[in-house]
Image (cartoon, rainbow, N blue to C red; front, side):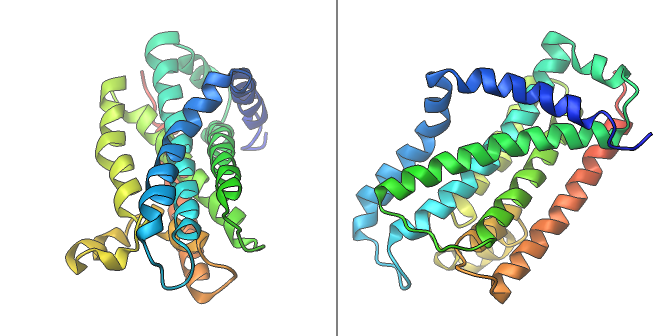
Length: 249
């Protein structure tokens, strides 16, 4: 039996749930409200007074908001979904009892989280295009979003499995995911930060996602950031597989 046998049904189940939620206008609006809020306040409000050396502030902001939306939605969909399945519906234990390999469970769950993150990033990109953002035609942007959503979905899987309750899961959002959104170059260049604070930010994956999303082609900087994201993806997916294999509850 292949290690990936069973990943398809897990993915299809998650996509069925996602399709049901997409049919609700309130769900789409809730996905968009925070990025649109930031776009209006920073892009159309304060952005008029910001002068960028290589383009408008909107062209700097929209890729960052896409990266932040992809991160938050990929992570939250998987982490909260596993928490709800473990502590409320008790369906995660059923998945663990199925004759599936840890690789299959991880692949199906991470792929579903990637779709959620990519849809959120696409919605932000469409809103940015309406506001006047014009991205360069390059494969760097989709490649970056694929790697970013994969690694944060895998991290969400680890958090969902390892935490002892929904409250503990929210701690990771409050003290890691949200700060990354503000300090990893989403709203302003890292060069604006003090060196002692900017240096550790380069160790976080969202920083490299934001760098790559703003590159107009396969530059050395873009390739370096993609390589870092790929390394994070491999490590976190491996960690997620290990968490699934060691799950006991």
